[in-house]
Length: 160
Image (cartoon, rainbow, N blue to C red; front, side):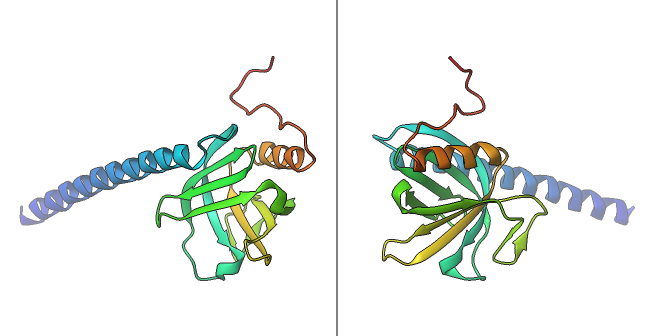
């Protein structure tokens, strides 16, 4: 009987913890959406997508990897990570290449990533990588903007 009681207490604790974590993550995402609106104010936003950040080359191997929002605008890429609350802006003109490796900084999910190589604010070469559901769209859109063209319509939009 005592074992059943202990199991019940543990189960209730797990349910309460999961409910708290779910609510906390949702609040972080709402905060990130609001911040992304501020970051992209005055810009033409082509697409915003949930993503998994694999890191920034200049920060080395030991850094936070995690979920966030990635936006493509007429001025470049805007990224907001949920935890920690990190922001990255990469102007279109600073991007030197776009590729789709399977890993970045020794991290992999066995899926292709969007890798963007760019010149940092100090002129140094840097790179970031993200896991995105619509990788091909991002590659096409970035290449279009880099060549001065409009990106293709985002996946959820219907064409003209």
